[in-house]
Image (cartoon, rainbow, N blue to C red; front, side, top):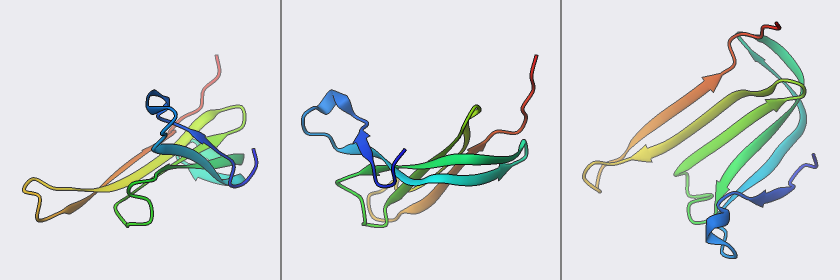
Length: 99
């Protein structure tokens, strides 16, 4: 991976891609309940229409030889179009077993 490297996510809208994956850290470590994973990549999901408007964020961490180890998203939702609530979503690897 290369920092700041990106590729389209929503290929159904080609050639007017709105969402991209972008490498934000090509070699980091990340700790979950399953342990500490070296040589992870942090990939941000960026949507052009809402990027830098403090509306949502989505990041995924993948570990070499393990795959996805953590995902964190936050966004604002509304039921009436006037008031908004921030919602968080986190998912992490909790165990690694080998057969």
